[in-house]
Image (tube, rainbow, N blue to C red):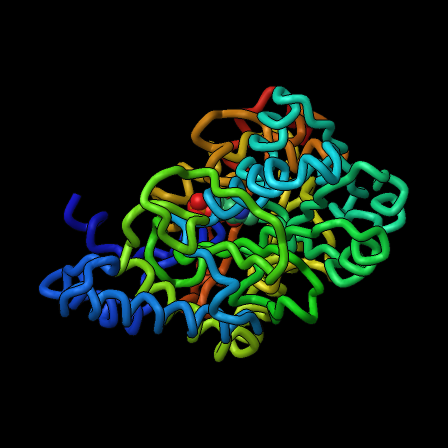
Amino acid sequence: MAEMMDRRRIYLDHAATTPFHPEVTEAMLPYLSDRFGNPSSIYSEGREARKAVEAARSRVAEALGADPSEIIFTSGGTEADNLAVMGTARANRDRGDHIVTTVIEHHAVLEPCHYLEDEGCKVTYLPVDGAGIVDPEELREAITPTTLLVSVMHANNEVGTVQPIEEISAVCRDAGVYLHTDAVQAVGALEVDVDRLGVDMLSVSAHKLYGPKGTGCLYVRRGTKLQSILLGGGQEKRMRSGTENVAGIVGFGVAMELAAREWRQRSEHVRPLRDRLIAGILERIPYTRLNGDRQRRLPNNVNVLFDFIEGEAICLKLDFQGIAASTGSACSSESGETSHVLLALGIPLEEAHGSLRLTLGRENRVEDVDYVLEKLPPIIEELRRISPLYPG
Ligand SMILES: *Cc1c(COP(=O)(O)O)cnc(C)c1O
């Protein structure tokens, strides 16, 4: 047992969450001990907390190419997505009742869309091609005079596909429709500048970029009509009631500053590791395919499909060898549901269960990749040997 505990762990699930950056932890610590003030209080403890929150807001805004007044701190990506979808739908009912999104969005966008359908809104779920890309021309055709919002994710959390957001925003601008993008997986891996992308709203989550869990933001372009989904004390300019998560926001600010400074370097670090993993897996293991687009994908994402076996069994065996990996999204592994993203890519239900997602991060090294390439083939071979479906 001791030997198992001491063994080196290789963390390859950065799309699920990331470890803390040491500078993030360091910046947060005072706000987890003696700097406990409520930012709304007028005495010095409160003013100190307010100053920290506003400094973080400036850092986040600067990292996104936004103005600090356009940042609403939230409890993370989920709340930012909920606020964007439900908040615009409710504030703009005079403009229409139609939303356009895609079949591969995160549940944090899809569920509010389903909820709004129950409230009488109409939602179009755009399909994607076999690689997981949305066609901007199909979006153009889906927009009607009653469309009030388009929501298309920047990069997919399961298969890593990167959408043509600039082309999509051109279509939305032509039509005069708000565009929201869930950029939770993109920030820190790609250049994310709200003006260059041309988006009106953009969601970010701190724990996907070496920051703390339970913090994130929604960027809201000045002039966008939005209604709060939380009712209470009116913090965040009435857009997000609730006492600010000061420590979390401080950590988020630092994580965003680091992401803006290091995204290119981080991408250049993980891209060759990703390519080595993909090539090594496809070379060594038969009946295996890459999910998603080969080129237009996040630099840290590997998502492969192994015929005849279950991704969950692979993950358990990898875990035993010291490797943390996942089948797809953290959410679908918990509920045991088939990935809606893989199904949207046209992968048959029985095959979709055989997927494995490996997502790299700043602390991974080439030795980690080689260790996986050594351990994975015998695991696949062993599982296939006991699979009744395996012909070999
Ligand atoms: C993780 C994730 C979310 C949810 O963010 P939380 O901060 O965990 O609520 C939303 N969208 C995408 C694409 C994600 O990867």
